[in-house]
Amino acid sequence: MFDVLLLQLTEAEPQTTSLLSLFSRMTPFGYAILFLLLLFSLLSWTIIVRKWLTFKSMERQNGLFISFFRATPRLSEVFAGCGHYRNSPLSGLFSAAYQELNAQLQTKAGETLANPGQPSLGERQIRGIQRALQRGAAAELTVLETAMSWLATTASAAPFIGLLGTVVGIISAFHGMGMEGTTSIQAVAPGIAEALITTAAGLFAAIPAVIAYNQFMRRIKIIAAEMDDFAAEFLNLVERSFS
Image (tube, rainbow, N blue to C red; front, side, top):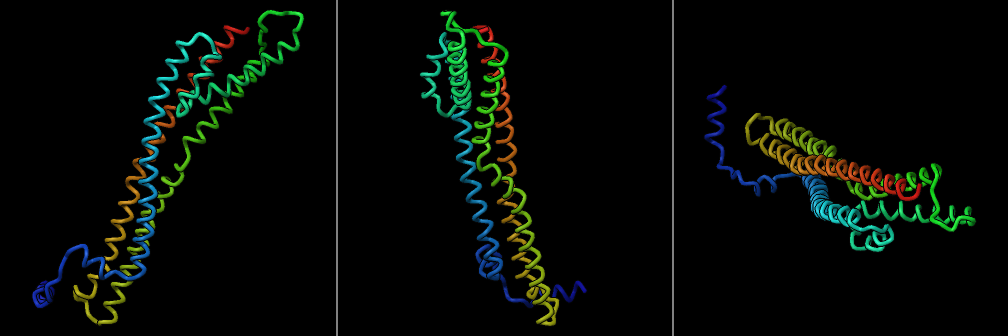
């Protein structure tokens, strides 16, 4: 058996093993699979680069904003300076809470006209500010999670798309064996090559998406924890100042 196979390989014409020759032997279905995987990969890499730049800017501006917040004695001055930290989720969180605080203070001042001093906030008003913080945090997390579903889709779907090309390639290889009535390497090689190319393309698209998705989700959790800490710090400040 081995001698027959060796004889067939010896008598066969020299075959180029370059990737270009493998691509040239692919079927239209194989090209369609590769085009689809290329689309997935290009979109994923676009998202990865943009997300990486966005998170890098967010992390830097979060640090700058929290320093500015702690160093500024008046909340109105912090609110006026929020425009300089537009990429910071903490800035958006503060803006939502400050607007609710102003609304609560105005309402409270209207209810206590007899007392011209600074109005105090009760438990009900504090809960309103807390809800505003929760809504602001939810809005910021929604922005952070934008396009993350595409990375998850690429990570899960690309290997299966490549597997589809593998199955079709194997079917093509066995069909070629049946049509030629032979078990030579020349009959099965094109289909097997196509199968391996689509499998590799599926993994090439999926692996970076998986790594990026996990890294970005870790960063989102860190930013979410920072927002929770900032919300608690803001509520403590409000309770000390207006209770």
